[in-house]
Length: 253
Image (cartoon, rainbow, N blue to C red; front, side):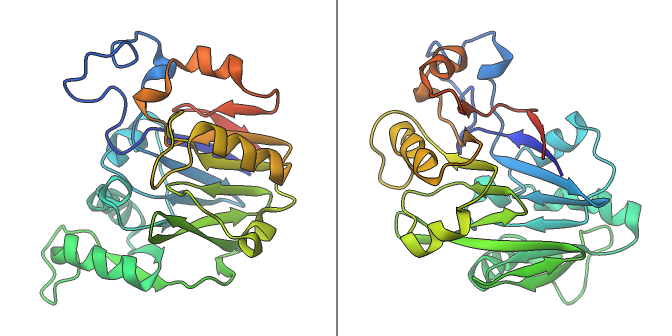
């Protein structure tokens, strides 16, 4: 399994528009973060989790030639706004894009991208094949996906475990029965916004504590705000097996 972090930033990305803080003005590429998304390649199947506003730029940067399916964690625009750009893959494959999401998220996509789902389909608009999911295991072609329920303040969101890789973003609470699905993961990715307490995201300390509790071989922090600080400084503060993810980071399991 090959994993690529397409983006590791929070909803505004880093740098933030018009921000004059030291992190936003950093010249270090490790401090530049597009909106959070990850790509998994296994058995000649390519799956992307979330298509945020930077999806086009991420696909071009990584020279992606094939995407077989999109998984959505939830309906917030920093995770869905790039859906229109799947049309390039429609043209290449000649088929609709398989999209997997909860029914609530699908309804939000139909509202935000009404032209995609219109009865009179506009020529050149993206085409999708919708697959509603619930909190039970499902399969994309040959790949088994285990959803993991988490809470983003009061909004239910989905994390996903694919083999030994678990990815959970935009969360501040996971119940014990859902944590059991994480157990045994070799790699655990978890959102860790910044150091201060936040009402809808794990902060850095909470993310580190949960990764430590779950005992993966290695943990990565994503969905990172400019308020967290410089990559190189925070990386040096973390336990040996926990790291800040960064845009373009590639892992192999």
